[in-house]
Length: 327
Ligand code: MEV
Image 1 (spheres, rainbow, N blue to C red):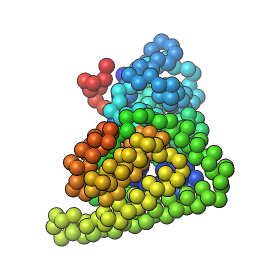
Image 2: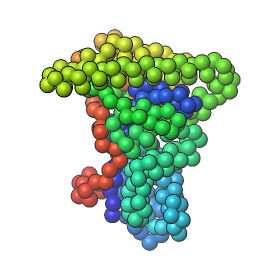
Image 3: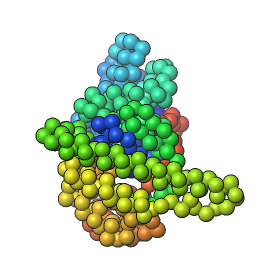
């Protein structure tokens, strides 16, 4: 029996545009999916509290791809999923599930896969189930930390501690449907939608400059044995989040609940707030800048669920077999 886990993520900037080759920034979060696999005589059995079709699809494709890497004959495998992430919540649950399954099943079958290969297979699973995938979710889930991502290539993005609050609408959404809606809109208005993607890409580039500059100041101060923060330009970062969110609204991926949570967070003093992930439901996140309590309360009052998270520097990993919460 092998247990592996992988983290969910928030996309800080650039979702949807990243599917069309524009840059985006994402970070892994401290909420994970655990996948336990063991050999059985024949067939594939999947046990999950969430029995959605798509979760089963992600797991089946992940197992097939692992078996395919060594052209093995069909294997009997039983998989049990335990998730700390809301399914379809925009926090990368599908990618975390695919990546953790690939790690767990490949280890069980004695197939040695490096992180690059795991991320690549994770992207293939997403493309099969969703129809299209930029690969950002499986990459960040595999490697952990924060990344600046473009076209299947990524750089590590250093981020000083950010005070963010996630707000879950309570309604899941389908990434596949949201990607398809955006693609239809682009077919109808190619020039306009491509302009929107370009501007979203510019926003991600600008955000990278701010995060890098703040990190350089932070490192300089650390080397002078001083514990001040890096003076992150939070106001500008907040502006960029609001601009990015306006463009996601224009792409039609918002919903009444998402807009409500964004507005409630801003009214409570957040410097910026935006949809994170595919939209249509799922989550927003707010840059709360010392007003975490007020923003969390505002999210609750607006009917959402505040989810406290931090950036996780651990990507996919094997777990000790004794984890109690795996049945
Ligand atoms: C989903 O978390 C992010 C999207 O941009 C899809 C993708 O990048 O594959 C909507």
